[in-house]
Image (cartoon, rainbow, N blue to C red; front, side):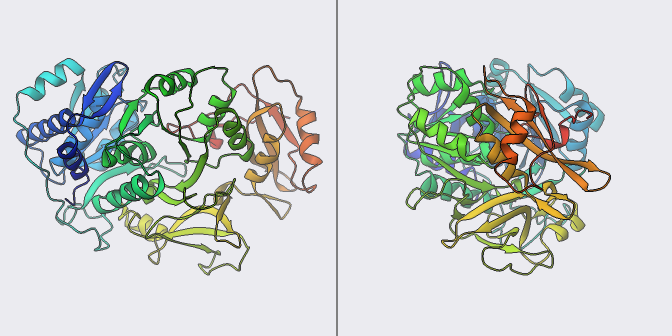
Length: 511
């Protein structure tokens, strides 16, 4: 089956009575998940939703998200995942830009979704579990899944929307909009199926015996594919956690005897610093992505919890995984590993030429995982994929074994008096200080140097350190032009919906 929802149909046929989803005491089997998603497909069809129509989902990590996600795909429609925390004007933009025909929103939401849907002229449905289940019973399950109608290899950039050739589009995922308004990445059934298969079989090696902690937001591509879709493909049980809290995660691991945990660096830092005696000995693998994981946090987590952490790299535009520290190869701390199956990477200079061995270049990606393009944005698509290779915006280097190391985001690089300073290098040094819990290094304007190096630091619980002490600590360990002249302490760092630190929202205090 070419449709991504085919994984669910196949797994449900193979092991109907095994648990698919857990939320507290609530359990849904694969047979139940299969039936409910088929009823969603029937409901959508009866309401006039046609193949290719966009249907928006604005829910936290609850079973209804999973039911709706696969139901939309089974109907041949396109999922538009949206952060439940979006405000009215943001909801209106996502719905209008995508051309969505329906919005399903969690019933406990504060009303921003309903107001945004009204402004966009889109039908809004509040999803309350009992009422939602009752509504589904009125529809006979739609058998099978809709054919995606496309092999995903025609190179269509998804920018027309009216040419009838959008059949392979499965998910329209909006980027975070760090450089302007969010852009919708057109992700195909083919690309998402490929990434799901590689992750579940070759990278995470999931089996029906696995229990996967689902605290990554499912509206984000990391949670959608690496936890939800990979678990469904392999027949594992997904333990849903609506909101990340360290104790809730550790309790869930102990209670459900979880075997796989996936998170972003801020989650690993929070778990490492959280006091708990929960038994997490059943964990066999932890996966980190979304941002670079400081080496000190990686080593500290492994020492405390006794479980290896494998780091990888991905993007919304690549469905998402590009590289990984594979379990059957040597792992290198601080590295994002090597490309996954069928995916190629290159390191390019500003002119699009391969850099010399050992030099830093922009990571470019080619493979079946790469998006078809940005929705209705042909110029942005051509800029991102000018020659068949997607420009990631990340600067990286490769070692003699081909392992890749992210140096920093291209836009985050600081140029101080003509010298390049890579924030991640300085952040790694700060994390080596015993009092530092998290750190973010950024450039601030400077009249003479162009930019100056600055650092916002969160201390570990009950730890003590002064900005001067931290400044001196870094100064003693890096070249003189690299250390941060401006250091300040904060209670927490701003993060996005996936837990990634948002440097653009850090307030720099006056000096």
